Length: 311
Image (cartoon, rainbow, N blue to C red; front, top):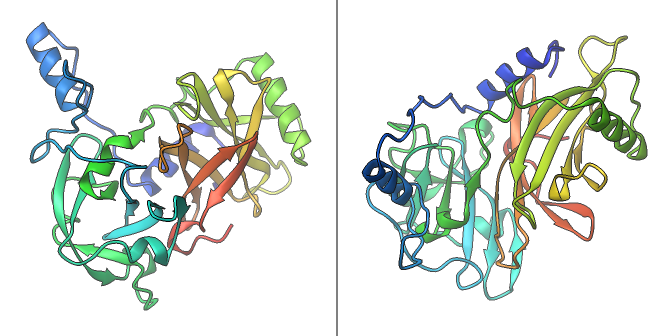
């Protein structure tokens, strides 16, 4: 982050840019009845094994990939398609292929951290982050900027069942730190990726994710450049499969050395049992999102960064 060298300050601005305000503390569950209700509302399996999601305006049931095509959106004053699964082609796609799947009047599902609602898709519009560009690359949705702070959405609504969010405390200092041994392994991975390390390593995020295992982790790190105040020697993110830093996969690295990365969530967009990661790039002037596939020990981006972010 430009002009931001401390982890605490960097995290605060990154979260502000991502438009993800901290959730209110809901407190501990005080009895079994309340716990059971919250478990069902949050989308866990009930006794019949039927996965339902979020209270919102009612639960959603229905097919998920690979039984159906699906589009995953970020919210930029409209639904901005980041990636999609084409059931007929049996492939993950991006861009206009995803935009064209959704027709005016179709039901879509939008979600904030703690609520979900069905909405009606409108015509293609400019997303807020590209206002004035003339690029109608998003789906207009009435009321999407009102009420809840919506973060993402899906078509069809049932697709939202496969979307998982990263814990919102993963960029806080209490989580975003590593041991000396972990630091040494991360510095070695940066060097192997062609990065300059120096002596100092800063940790922006440590997040629990699930690519092939629920023990996977993502480490977002950067190395300050002591000679240039507004940039880094290196910035990027690694996947630690099974939580082991002995097996690190480079997910993203900065080309400008002026931005940092976060993982926001994961989903199995094509139903192949390997989840795609929802990544976010954050820099002084804005941010962008895209999905990343991990295959055979390497990462492959799905499409371009959203909102015109060029990195």
